[in-house]
Length: 144
Image 1: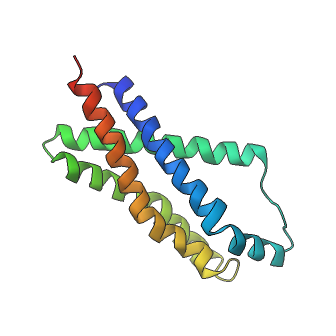
Image 2: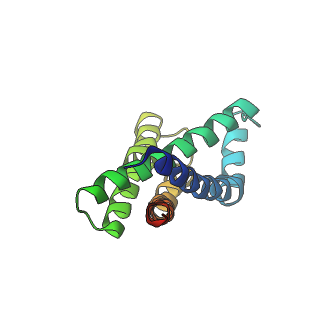
């Protein structure tokens, strides 16, 4: 395992995740989220620091996903299976956990769609991003 390759491939996976999150929250869920926040009396809760933190942690998720992929593939798991497993692990620890936490802890705070659409979206997004990162990791490994 090469830490530099993991970080670089992980940053690529993080970029894919960040693009997906921008589409999800900036386009698909923008209006339902804005409506829910207006109903709560919070018209624009976003800040530059908050956005930077979200982007940063999403890049970290990409790096962790490629690291998990590298660990799994090093132990004999097929490359596609390793990428899928790492992506699904991140999905459970991130999307599913967040939705259950918000849905169970604050059941009437946000509409169900705003809470659960990200879970469905990220079921595709996480494995896809880690697979793309894994391809970059493999290409870097194959280079002399």
